[in-house]
Length: 258
Image 1 (cartoon, rainbow, N blue to C red):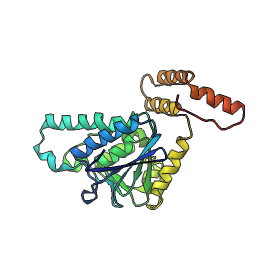
Image 2: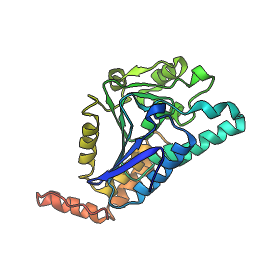
Image 3: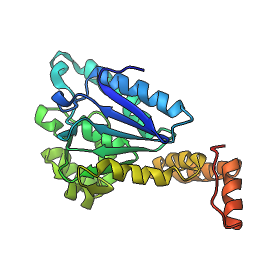
Image 4: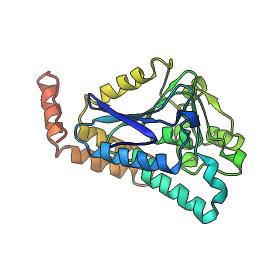
């Protein structure tokens, strides 16, 4: 499919989605979010794709936030709808997706850009990256999951400080507080993301999906029950039987995703 605001490519079971609005620092507008939704749904449904990497075009920005040009025309109802549609169509879709999604954060990840990265399951940042949620400088708060996902990643106190002050973190600071998993050079960013995803793709796709579901339930009232249920369901898969047989017979498993 042809897109106007994103680029997509699949190589060796890895699907790459690049936000391609470099002149706008890859800011998220309605059209870009709509294309992201379409691309994500297609990738999750494609059996040839094992995982995804999301990044931004150029070296200056992953995504420098939402495109605020349309904000003045919105009232309270319009703002609510904007947040709800973005959450369900893109951010929650990524977080709850059946395949691993890694954010390769190149440059600025601000506002909706950081929220996009946080919705991904793993984050790798270039050493020139800067991350923050500056919505309060606009008289707003984060609306794409920032107030929920940031405390889960770095703790309530640090998240409160970041959101209320609108201060940015450097890549090294983000690594220290657990906001990102790895920091590397801009030149090595995609290679590091590919390295991590390559390891995941050696695991059972069924188990990967189950693990994502269980980890996402962490801290919820039924988190342990969801883990138990997902664990039990794995026993009904051919992948589990293959994995156990391979272990017992000291060979490398060949998972089929069934």
